[in-house]
Image (tube, rainbow, N blue to C red; front, side, top):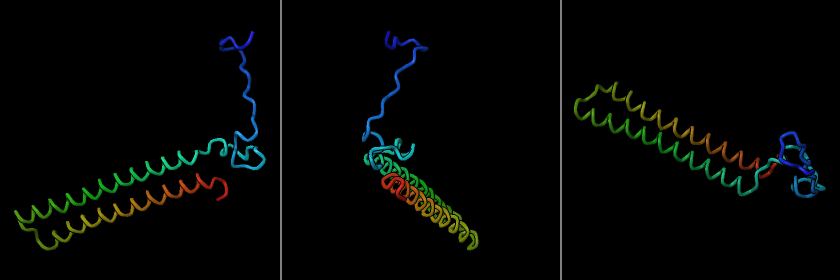
Length: 125
């Protein structure tokens, strides 16, 4: 009786069709397990777009935080003026948040581009 669906009934193993798996390799054979799991170009582009959207959200969130700190410091300075040393320190915190924002965004973009290039080029890099 063919596979009756019972858990102990062995299933037929899938047959290898040359050229179907590992299409980027020579002679239609698998070079490695990575060839089998390599995403398609469209999947790689979607991952890159998602990475860019995530990086944009990160950048906007930290830029908004830096702006909010600057806005609150300016409003508080109008109500009760800070000493020059404290005002300079608070301005430094605002600039620090913005510099961290730029650095993290650059890292996110670099990692996303590197992953995209690796997925497209495969094992040739």
